[in-house]
Length: 112
Length: 114
Image 1 (cartoon, chains in turn red, brown):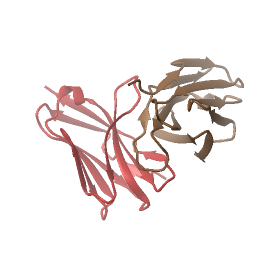
Image 2: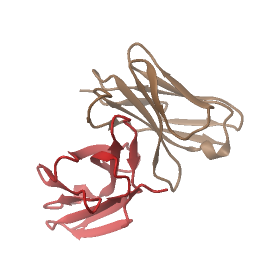
Image 3: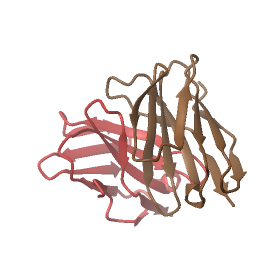
Image 4: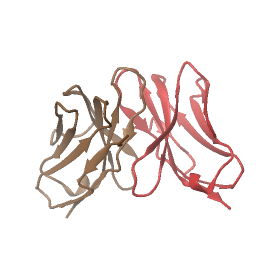
């Protein structure tokens, strides 16, 4: 039962353009969502999060959008840079359980 | 500020042996989490420790256990190792377990079972 889904295993974007990574979830109890970036041989690095009481959160080049009715969130990276090439995971948490449920990741490649 | 540190980086064991993995959280963090990432699978939640107590457990057999020490560092023990336990084990920490705080991850221990 995959409660958090990232349906695009890979995405290729040109440098300077916008990267949009998508994530869908099925558990309506999720109330906190996070995006992580992972380089090979390193642990995931926290990028940005959003609480279910908001629909948008920005941090520099990164913006996360949450559509609760559609159970969908997206990460926008503008402008995309070659150093952004990595695997991106979305994760979700329900209530105070503190267990993160992860998607399977999207490999982003930013080309020159 | 030092991040989450894990040791060893790699660990090779044989079936039936026991493995001990260690994690030091970010200074000031009291909650420690363990996740497993098996080949081809996503990160799966294993255990959550806060203030020395096990607070939550994922869908793993009892041979996966751990503890948290008074200095908030943690150990993950895996007994009676099986081939399917070969995976990357990631530790994360957060400033507390009660509010929405992001979990910050270490670089993991790669456990290989021969």
